[in-house]
Length: 302
Image (cartoon, rainbow, N blue to C red; front, side):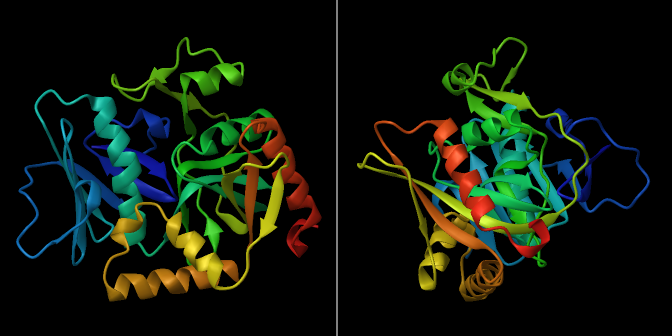
């Protein structure tokens, strides 16, 4: 077993996870144990969900064609049943994405589909659908000297704090080219993708209050617009951009998720960032978000 640290948790893992950086010294009782083992299809009566996901009581999992089956239980145990000759990078990709997102949900975190960036003593999170440019924007913030808390999976704890994730950003080759970053020496996320792992150099980070939420959208106009969102519309947006929101299934999970969203928007500013389709750039988007942040500083950041 190899010991790693991420999301403020100690992981004890049978699979090597270089994405998390160097292993840490074993000693503390692990929060999550990750093992290989045989897994059967979901039991009868399990709630079948899209994309190979399922949920049943304290367990949930996913089956990924040509990769394997995964099961997370009670936020403490993960079992991986890989197919023969599965690409280790693909195994890690779904473990550190979908499965760890599910683990953090099981540990009662609100998990958002976005990127978190440290600004002063607080965080801004940028949300958006796949392909919206979240990771490219995170790399632009990193280039400007801002600490990127996490890429793609942003857990928010019960105190409304963003929790630091993996010190890497996943970027397509064309995005790296636009940022002036060569792909030489960067690891592909798998053989099937022209997407690469960009390591982040950052100091040790602790959870910080989430104070700004920006949702990336596109519009046919010519100007970059920031549109504050209030009331019930904030809950619809947060549900839409919850990571693997298919797992928010059943009345208990839905009620808990609604309360988590209510607690978050009570302390965070929610804004749609509407970017012109024909002329939007990552530089202009970053400038617009930072200008809105500095025009709306909470007391601890002023």
